[in-house]
Image (tube, rainbow, N blue to C red; front, side, top):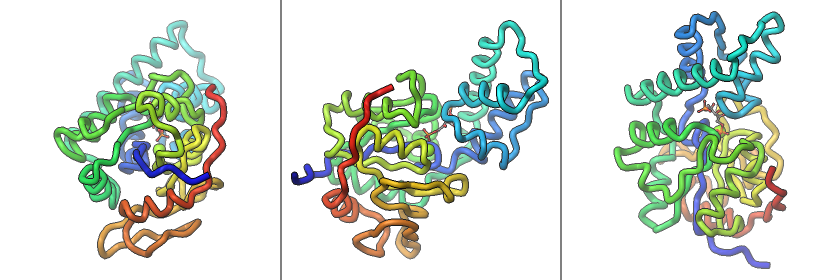
Length: 265
Ligand code: XBP
Ligand code: MG
């Protein structure tokens, strides 16, 4: 069977569009803990382990269950988690507003080229919607949220990545088949989600995910690259040594294996 033409690019946010985890989400969690009088502190190494669990509220619960054996949760623990997470979101979006986190190399360039070519664009992420719109607004362009036909984010589906649900939700909203799309991810949880939805996926790793095993990805790169600093290919092949552009993506997509879709959670 021939592959349908590439019609849409679906982007993960954290770690893919921008390196938001270590110096964005992590300090925002810590600020929220301090604000609530808690002495919890997630250092860079611990946070790398906690990233195993996607979703901020889910991550806080996981931390309490697995790292604080002596902590006795208060009767209103569910409310505490919600309050902590609200405070974390505020700290995080304020950090973005201060211009705290740039887009990763090649992201602005590729999105501009895709828009010019009329390629359909979407976001598929586990992070809170306000975080996405703040990042797009302050690190991409004032109206950048409007460039994306669908922003699938946060609790919109109960089962977060690695479940395929957020991608399936976006596909349904856009009335697209997975084979007509390409996903951009940075982590194994993200790759499981996109492949589970049947979408061919390109990985750009970051410090937290560089050692993960990306079986099934079309290719694994260190970044999308810019003129003068091309991507380093860590796994798979790129059709050219140039920064990743639409021509590269179309060639990769035309030859990609079609991942087998799994059932939603
Ligand atoms: C992103 C996440 C998110 C953020 C925090 O994963 O795991 O949980 O760290 O976001 P992915 P919230 O890049 O795979 O979507 O605190 O808003 O949940
Ligand atoms: Mg990610």
